[in-house]
Length: 145
View 1 (cartoon, rainbow, N blue to C red):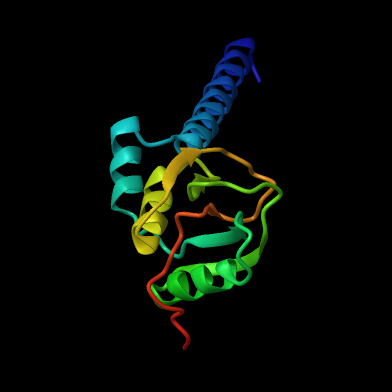
View 2: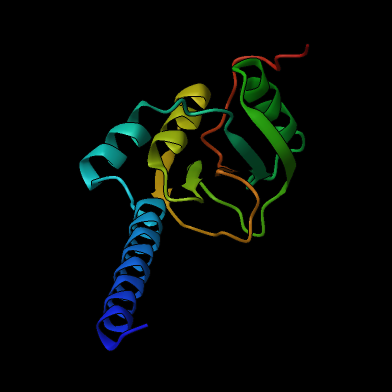
């Protein structure tokens, strides 16, 4: 082959190789592409809330308050996954948003009919919302099943 043919072949190989690199780069960019923030917000807001996991802690001296609150919440289709005693006594019921979603805490407070909502993120707890019952939790009657 002449020097001219070798040069053409060399340029052709470079062009094909460059095109392959561009195609691979475009594919990677398409795979890594994230939706615009507005689109992501729309998807997040339209997604169903799903189940809300709750822990109920008794912050009163009354025995059985956490069990009573658990029954109230479960009747309202909330998923109480733990109940027990709080480390401290409180006067007013606290509803703590553990995963940064205050709307879920608001739904729990509404189901109980009381509670001060606070953002206290704690990713080590495996719940969306923690409820610490205070002395203000006075259900009209114990809602046995």
